[in-house]
Image 1 (cartoon, rainbow, N blue to C red):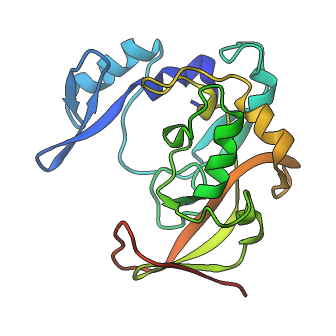
Image 2 (image 1 turned 90 degrees about the vertical axis):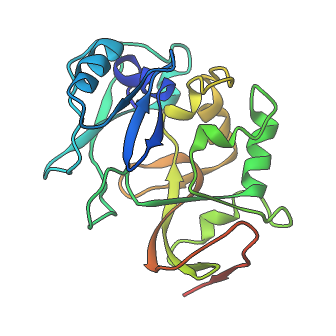
Length: 227
């Protein structure tokens, strides 16, 4: 869905557990279990392109990332350039991730985004973090300085890799949240960070990896250990 004119409808789908299996839930309420041959057919029809569900990441897999700010006037524009990026670059154990297995956003940064959001809401669903840290006493976008630090949440230690550059996906409609095509442009006016060789990009939150596993629960204490 980083290239919305091809894959934007993916955000209309949901996942759920059907016993030990995972199912894809379509907007009409239909649930099709992964592994059922009809799923590929139904997804292909839904997306208007031939697709196949796989459960193992193959070498060389990549994604198309359109510049979200270039799509501000037409989020589904066909005539747009895209950068081809390897998937899961910071996930050496496999899996299907944009970049890293964990995405963390502090509440202070979400609150600042609420101020510029078309809906006037924090819209956490748009940004799909694994973890939201309650730290309203901190300045917005303080996470820009966490790179290389270790973040302890409950029993778990996370290694912070980099601020998270935002793609076009948060600008799409998400359930009851309407499309907000200029959201990333407005975010970029507040917070831009040099990301690898990609230049200064609009960022919110951080990517991280698990360096020490364990359990976490809502309300666990959080601490940041800088290198």
